[in-house]
Each structure stands twice: as structure tokens, then as C-alpha cells.
Length: 331
Image 1 (cartoon, rainbow, N blue to C red):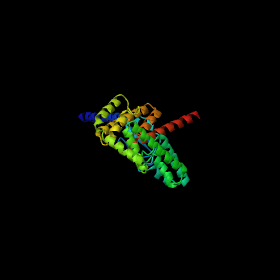
Image 2 (image 1 turned 90 degrees about the vertical axis):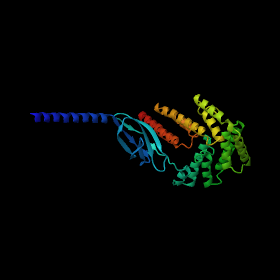
Image 3 (image 1 turned 135 degrees about the horizontal axis):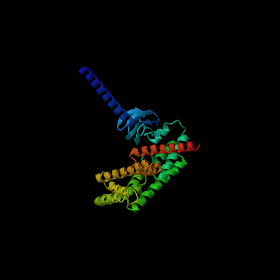
Image 4 (image 1 turned 180 degrees about the vertical axis):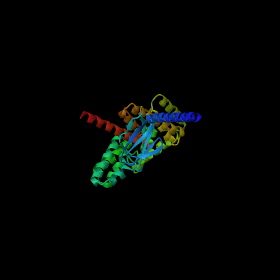
């Protein structure tokens, strides 16, 4: 009789344990979702919350619900990052990631099988675009003079390129002179330095550059005051505007005086992160156009941060896909 009860008890215990396990598994399975990731070109590594998971294209199964960070990496291309949210029992299809080469544009275009005339046309388009943005000689690998020099390297007598070369010089000179007159020594230093680098025969610009550096050397005692103005600007919401009275401007003036000033470097980083948060909030509200505007304002201020270009690429892809989806619905 005792053995019979023990057997019944054992079967009951096993049943309860099995039922509990099934309940746990059911709960676990119901709190996961999946992600589909595709890239152009394919074969990129997919990192989920810091762990290498797969290569594109791929469907990631049993991903816990909630927020996650996806990183896409491939040799020869810029790293892409995106915050995503996985819903319970739902499949999140991320927009197609168009990977952007991290090689200099000139090298990329030159490696494409095309005629000299076609390469000149592309470099001219890029040069004129940079000139219209005011990127005369900076950033180094995406400025007007960078692309215009590529045209001149193919055809040294190209009349349009020679005229643009002259226009770049005149625009930089005007920028430098205006900044000097307004005592914007940070901008004056940058503009005259660019003239000295790309137009070394301009002796007046070289003398002006010496004058700017000399005046900056006498302004070290102004650093505490400029730091206070920068902090006040941030508190007042004047991060990058209005011109000449914002936190970024004051930080730039300090760094012109003392390039490695730790407080100004920290301030500059703080400004950038604040702007990235603003852009991120707009994305969460599905205001992709608004986010693009923020990123495009940040890009020339922080050209060294490849994340910004990556964000612009991802959002532009999303905007294009949304537009295409609306067109299909209308058809």
C-alpha cells in the first residue's frame, strides 16, 4: 500500500514539475519577438547589445521584448547603429541598411569603371555641393577644394574648376576677414589656417594668421569668463544658435586659445550629446525630417564623429522606404 502511494506521489510530483516547466517555457516564449536585418551590400556583421549574432541578411529569433541596440559592421564601410524596440510575438523588420564606404570619396569614385569625363562630372557635382554648404576646405576629405582638386588632377586646365578654385579662395578670405572684424578669433584662426594650407602664396593671409595667433595668446585670462558664458548659454537653451552667442561658439573660442582645454572639450562633447538626444527624441516621435535637420546641423560642427553620417544614412533610407510605401498604397 505504501509503495502504491509513493508511486502515485511520484507521478503527481513529476506532473506538477512538468506543468510548471511548460508554464515557464510558455511565458518565456510569449515574451520574445524577432528581428529581420538586411543590408546593401550583404554580409555585414549584426551585433545585438554588444554580442555578435549573425551576418546579413538574417532573421534573429527569440529576441527578448524591450529596447535593444543593433550595430551593423562591415570592413571598408562606416559602422551603423540603431536603437530598436522588440514587441511580444512580433517580427520587427528593420529598413534596408545602405552601407556607406569609409574610403575617401575620390578613391571610391576613381575605382569605379568610368571615363575621365564621367569622373569629372561626379567630382564637380560634389565640389559644388560642398561649396554651397560652405564647406570650402573643411572637413578635409569632403570639402569643395578636395573635390575640385580631383577635377584639376584629371584636367589641370578645366575652366570651371579653375573658377571654383578662385571662388573658394575668395569665400575663405571673406570669411576670415569678417571673423577678424567681429573678434571671432576661433573662426578667423580656422579660415586663415585653411588659406595658408591651400593657398600658401597668399602672404597677406600668412601675416593675418600670425596676428590671430598673437591675439589669441593674450586672451588666456578670458577662458574662465568664456566658460561661464558657455554654461549660461546651455542653461538658456542656446546650444548652437544664435550666431556668436551660443555654447558651441564659446567653446570654440576657448579651444582656439587653448586647443586641449579639458573643460572646453568636455563642454563640446556635452553639446553634441545634447543635440543627439534631441534628434533621438524626434525619431521616437516618427519626425524623421526633423531629426535629419538636427543631424545636418550637427555634422559640420562635429565632422570627426562618424555616427552622425551613419544616422543620416539610416534615416534617409527610412524616409525613402516610407515614401515608396505611400506611393504603392496610392497606386
